[in-house]
Image (cartoon, rainbow, N blue to C red; front, side):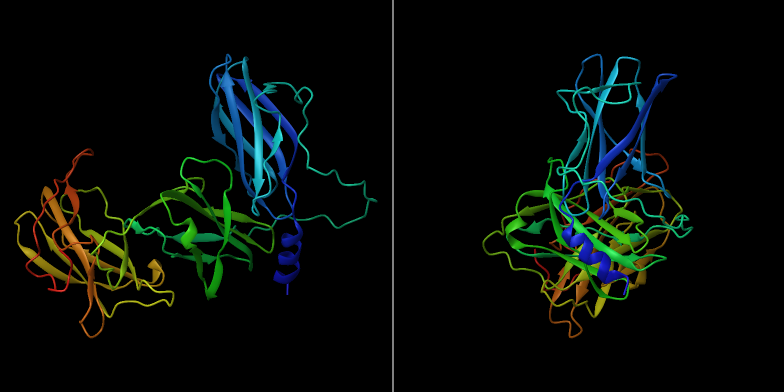
Amino acid sequence: MLFLPLAARSADDTRPPAISDVRSTQRGGQVHIEARITDETGVLMATCHHRSGGGRWLDAPMTKNDYDDTFKVSFAGGPDTEYWIDSSDLLGNGPSTYGAAAKPVAVGTSSPKEAQAQRETPEPPKRREHRPVKVASKAGPPVIDHRKPGATLPEGKEVTLRARVRGDAAIAFSGVFLRKQGESGPGTRLALSRVEGESYEAKIPADKAHGNVEYLLAAKDENGKQSFGGDGSPSTWFAISFKPIQQGVVEQAFRFAVNPPARVRPGRSLTVRAQITGPGDEPSVPGKAQVLWRGGDGQEQVTDMQPDATGGLGGFKAELPPQTAGAVYYQVVACEPSGSKCAVSTGSKRKWHAVAIAAAPGAKAAAIDAASSKAPGSLPE
């Protein structure tokens, strides 16, 4: 019941965030800036643009406090540092600004000259109402788990993104923001819809499936706490690429998301994880998944993969035994229950994922080009 009123209010929100109570200080070679940024739907991003001595502008994402609407950022700077702030909300409204590149704010001043951050249409004053004091909830914000598609995707074909979204309170809003790689701002907002339980899906439409794009997941609970799902950090957008489909290339029976580590220390096992799903609109998973691999001795081996609940729909994992220094090469192969159709994670039975087995960083496994003797015959060359 709490979800419906909030969803209705969010749909009516057409105004960007409001930026107020901005404070900046400089000490010890560091500049510290904080601002109160509020929005009816929720703040997607806040960025502080700064420079010193009239140099080029640098961008620094601002981080929200857990229990209030204060956003903060710190960076290296001196008394000659100047800055401005912009912010957009979860519906893509914005950006609103505090200052501007043409009229920046000097560190230590309380407001920009001739420019004040405000919503596009000022609200009329409201009669003060006595409301109970809001006590910050100790519950955490929503948690978003997602793995991006691992391979290059076919251009002009719809792509389904899958994620797990869970929280201590009911999820009131979830979405995916999509933009061309290299652009700034929130881009286009896609619906991230609940399928069942904690499983959510979003679809990148076919007309957006071109070139290099990036996306960021977002969720907000009924208490107003929000979080973002990025690539390694909440503010890092996932990057994916779409390529034209080559003539004569047959689409595989399954799609894979595999992210092999670059390096594993000698004597430690290698955990192989993959998300494997059917290419159609109806979610499907393979009847069997295996890892074909070869270690330092060059001998090919097969290890069955087991379902991995933490990997979402189609999640599988397998544990490869510890290896000595060198490299491990592997492919993930998935087949329909009948075994009539199979697919390989690298797109070809001659290509392999390569993982260096080394004690020190920087080691890189050399690529190999050799067909697996244990691969099903139906796999593409």
